[in-house]
Length: 581
Image 1 (cartoon, rainbow, N blue to C red):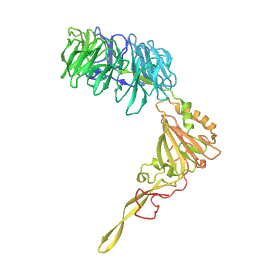
Image 2 (image 1 turned 30 degrees about the horizontal axis):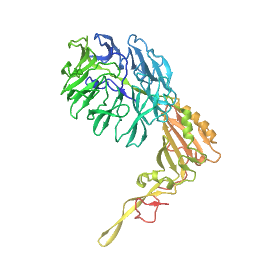
Image 3 (image 1 turned 90 degrees about the vertical axis):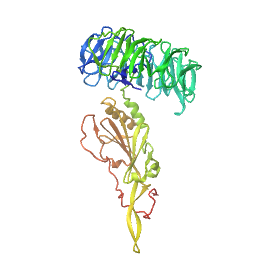
Image 4 (image 1 turned 90 degrees about the horizontal axis):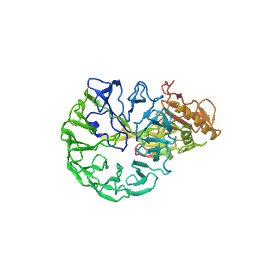
């Protein structure tokens, strides 16, 4: 869900600014890197004057209503107002941020939920703990959110759901209409179009209409159908054919839509009348991404670019390697090495040339709140006095053979790996789960038969008993105290299950099982040992940035095991895939 767009080459940045309809005023200021400098400056688009020269080491974001963000020396983000960059607007730096959209930005502190920030840098709301990811806000103050159960929905600027229904995916939201996925198979999902109250307007199967990149805009939705792009209204009725599918998502803007005929690009109006025949190698509309932009289009002919209007009138001549409309009468022109701002008469209004222009934006953030109590309950639900995940006391490897890759790859190994419930698992056994035995062949020479070792047979040890289960999971993306918080919460859950702390870091059950929990570099490990007497040393708990005191291959005493290479089977000619019990 998260999408960052960093500073780009001058050529590429022209085509990244069209995805979501937002209204944030005109583009007044532009972060640039001046020719001959590695620092970032800010230029006034109208006058071309550099108002802040060599001010930032890191690339500032696009400036929306005078406010922008930039990464500081600690790798975190601060908000600034272009009129006063002496100190940030925010008191605490953020782990993640979005650009401002319709008066709000989203920001995340270490270990916290998602905050809603106003243009003064103040926190005006916090998203609920169950909001895992959230997009920037649309013009009507609605955002797409993903929740901790991985379902998606729509929320307002206070993080409140617009309605209770959630979906597998929200493809897009715009102008009060959302396209969602609520059921269907991976191969053929069902897209449903809803309004902001949750009312369903119509549904289409992907096999009929592909809406995977569609956006409702100006009463129309452009979808892929039968190898064509067609326009539907919000009742699902077909209104016309746009053209062939292209790599760019297509939507109506200012009553206009760029179409593709399979070779070139042109322009149509809302009624699908052709305004400009398909003749350009590329044609990029520029309205309504972050700013209110004029209805002008970047057009490409061969290796040259220009700017045209809807009547195909040339605004910026096709003698540029790069051309981009900043406003009705201000344009960015140049080549891959440098560029400048010009007016309608192609007169240079810049005082300096630029070698880079920032187009950095972020459209969503991810919560950094770690629900230690919820995670502890989740792990505890897989544990009883005599079982852990799929393993029960007394189980043998035969129950888990389907989890092994092959007898050959498992020869000499004591464990098999698995995944369940977000945990990486290792089922560990008392004896090797597979063994190798010499394989012999014979040959004739001068009337005599000779026997030689020609390789190995590999056989599963089906009766190897379960010894322990390890469960691992990673919390390194969360605050550094997350591991300790989890251990404290998990200890309470273990107490409910009858496991009590005996020695530091070890929890024993009266029926014989024992558990230890440790962590290192943000990875938490839970070790469940069925014969608790064999658990003699607790797993280490190493805070991030600390050094582990010692390394050991196992944390519990293993019973005597057989030599993996000395096990003899009845025949030296046994198939390598054979099992024995």
